[in-house]
Amino acid sequence: MPMELICASCNTKSIFDDDAASGGAVECPKCGSTIRVDGGDELSETMRVDLNE
Image 1 (cartoon, rainbow, N blue to C red):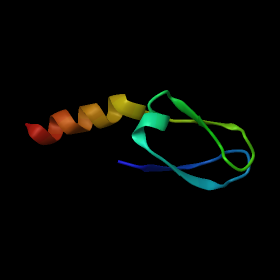
Image 2 (cartoon, rainbow, N blue to C red; image 1 turned 30 degrees about the vertical axis):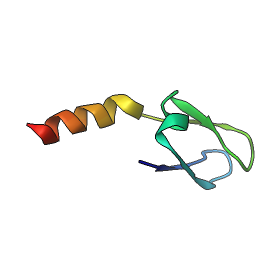
Image 3 (tube, rainbow, N blue to C red; image 1 turned 120 degrees about the horizontal axis):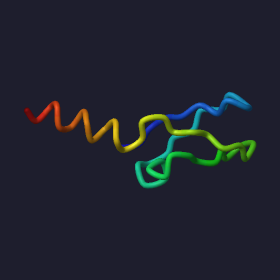
């Protein structure tokens, strides 16, 4: 499931897939700054578990 992240440096919105974001950080395609992915896979796993119960 793709996620939209906003770069803190240049405020550009970019869409990343789960594979790119699973490392905890991605690189902004516009300015090259690192965008931290808060929660990452752990959050979605927790949500999935809760939804299944």
